[in-house]
Length: 134
Image (cartoon, rainbow, N blue to C red; front, side):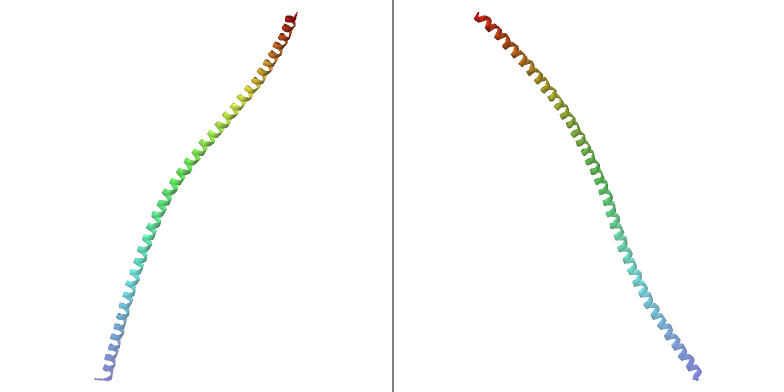
């Protein structure tokens, strides 16, 4: 075999070894790529699960916020009603105080009238007692 043939056989063997090495590297690259794809898929699935959980939590928070807002509005309405009742009670108390003051003034006037009548009765009694002795 001539040396040039041997060189070409050696070159073909080298080329085949290089091609085999490239194929091996390609297979390792493919396996690594597949592993990466699997990991990315798992990460994406985890992210989708987390997004779903966050969406559910958000929906619950929105529903809870609506309930809290309804309770707040109800409490405000009850507070307004209580305030209105307090104001009405204060007005009623003031009116009752005015009635009592007027009643006290009337009672004082009647006491004065009674005292005047008592004095008149006493004067009449004094006058009649003088006539009895004569």
